[in-house]
Image 1 (spheres, rainbow, N blue to C red):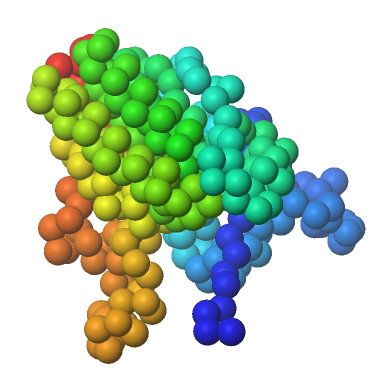
Image 2: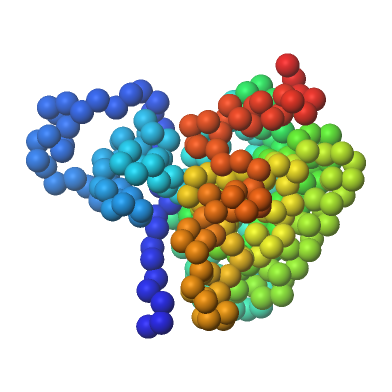
Length: 291
């Protein structure tokens, strides 16, 4: 095998917001067997920690600071005061009759409880209204098919119609191979919608989360008026090893990570997860929002 596949789980944080305190009744303390799903392993440092602890750290590893991947619903719960979803039931078909695609879609819907790899809606963040789109790496690695492209395009158009700021949390492995040219067409469609939104003076904040790659990076992810990222986010088009094999050179350490891109001028700011809501609120207020 040329490449070794690495698997990362998209975490689903517990919904309770009460602080977690380990007690004698805790199954870890008692030495009992813990049911599957109650532990998570950091993909960066390998630390294994109790799932409840993630709730108090917003999905950030306590040992190394790695920002673990979040599901769209967890992300929305963390940053919004209120959220009114639209186009929830829009589901993908199989335009190219790609073998096994329907089964894969059904499996992802069952596991994630989402219709597709992006959730869109009207939101308030720090009492500031906006249109919000959040991509979910837990659904086919956030790959962009026809429905993902359509939902994001409709979100951009809604922001234009209602003269609201637009915020997109990007998380994607790129274009969805099962849809071929239909998937690639979404790059141009969304980019044109963003351009039209920009021409009427709309504010677009692009938030890059791990991973933001492929056709998403090559289109709307890098079109924001303000482009920010979480620490350690993988950002790029082709993978590191593909590039190295193509140009026959060794790339710098940290290549395609958010910190490297900030240094080279591709990002405006890196924002830790616990500061994201406050920062977005401030940005929305500065650009004519509610004070």
